[in-house]
Amino acid sequence: MDQPAEQAMRDNPVHWQHYDTGNPRDVYLALKYSLSDRSRYHWQVPMVKEAVELLLRNLRAVEIPMTLISQYLPRHHLEIRAGRLTADPDDLIDASIRMVLRGYSAAVC
Image (cartoon, rainbow, N blue to C red; front, side, top):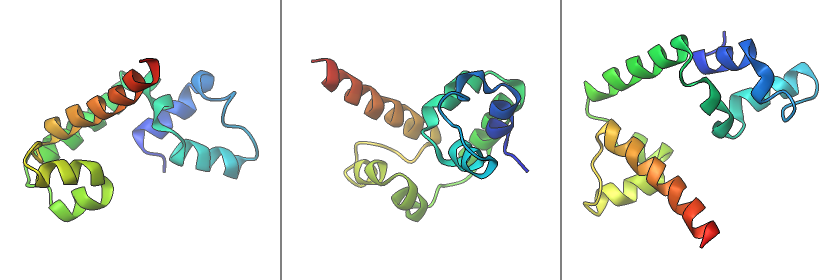
């Protein structure tokens, strides 16, 4: 069963169908593991938005284990250990956005 973002992308393939081609298995893998930037077109789809809100509610209700942050967000883990970032989900999201924007900024300077 597809996750909400995958389902939204399958329901409206206009933003990815020219990039992710091939046999059904290739398309499945591309949608599941390709660059996440293509999902940006689907953030406002109600089922995706609801899934993100549920995820954030759940993450805010617990202390995210540092072992998970270390495994899935290694750069964030280093920043947390250095005291420059907290493990708060909103802070982690903001840090992720800043990291991507720094890359774009460096490319145009």
